[in-house]
Image (tube, rainbow, N blue to C red; front, top):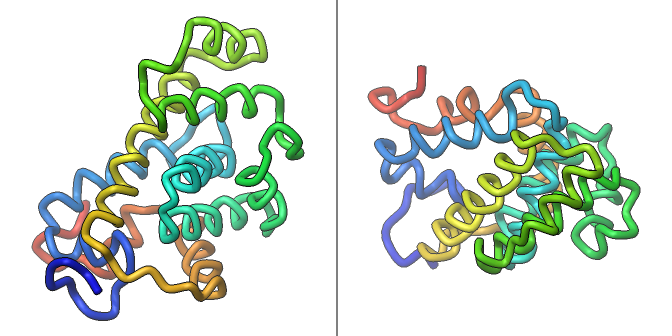
Length: 190
């Protein structure tokens, strides 16, 4: 049961955002830029970083929905998402993404854990400064999003089919457009 009265029929972060649409707007805009907008990392790769961070934070809602969005971007490959969460070093992802996941894991623990060697290794595997920057910001942002979801004790269904269907919608439409369906008219994003 949520710690505060949240709107019925919405789960996880969507209920918290509907409760406070003024903060939902910049949160959705940030995640849109980080995970959806044009980038040298694919949307699937960026969603894997968000999923892995959420997995490390033990946030069921976020690891489930972002895992579903990642799978939707990766031709439905749910097994790959599961492998990344369980042992990304042996998953069928690029060495560059593995190096970025190392950085994300360290940010999840403490930003100070990221070393110059971690960054140099990622660079040597082809990561650009933008990709390193955005990996750090995705991991940091998802620590915040995860704590937002769990700190309010939002409702987090166990129905994987629900996440799968919602993930396909978000993958197609993006975060800003999807948020228009649950935010009040006055707070809808442009």
